[in-house]
Image (cartoon, rainbow, N blue to C red; front, side):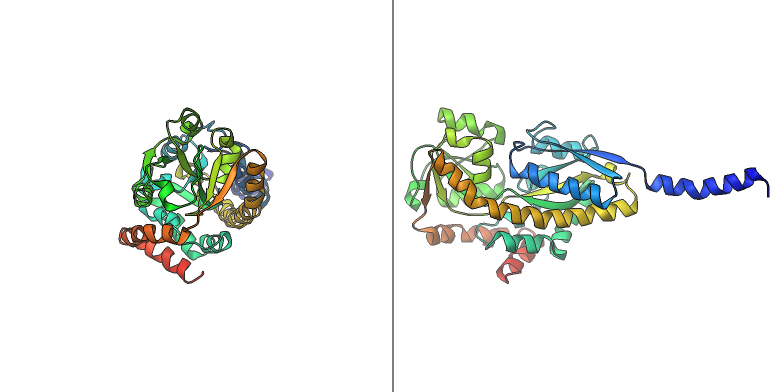
Length: 327
């Protein structure tokens, strides 16, 4: 065998290895402020991906709606214009028709951050993420923005009667509309980026929201009353475009999925640890924090919505059963 043949043989053995180790950089965005826990959670994921792929897959995180709002991010991911994003799960039924994700926002079905984290990192969580495959999207994990509470401009809400008629911003999906109509507010669909100015001008009286967003979007300057209702959580879904996903080696794909699962658990622990500190911050900045005297009655008002939505998708039933069993 001549030297050329030997060189050619070695080259043929090396090329597949080099191809498998090809580096790729993903630009991933989200619609929250860069000071929000969504940004931190996506950075946790990015760090884990870099570590587990030995630097083959790198992620650049873009907050502050730099790559678009949730709807624009989802549309961009589907057609491969955007590599990936962290998108609020509530937006998926609205934009993608992904009804199973309504399972994550049934009112008062989840008891704690830890419980939701446990379920989302289980096989059931994997099954939910897999429903995105048909949308040309690879779901790889979750980041939690925090329990949703009720923020009003100047009227304290301490009882059910106080909700009546309040012009309240909601994400305009059927589930949220049904929940808030049952409670008695006047629900108004509105883009997330418009909430501050709407509160400031009185276009809306209130918004159902997590305290992490009240802080990161400085909403406490426009509204001064928070009522701790804890009606549902606010998961964001870490997702990658199918076109980008297919560029990765099988080894890197497995590493990214493992990074997503670990980032989910870490992000939920972080969200739980920050809740009390964020509430304290709001109080220090002039916000009055109220408790609802008849929270059990609020749960009773929204219970029929859970019954109705359980009939809409089998996945919702599975999640409700898992939460009821404490899993």
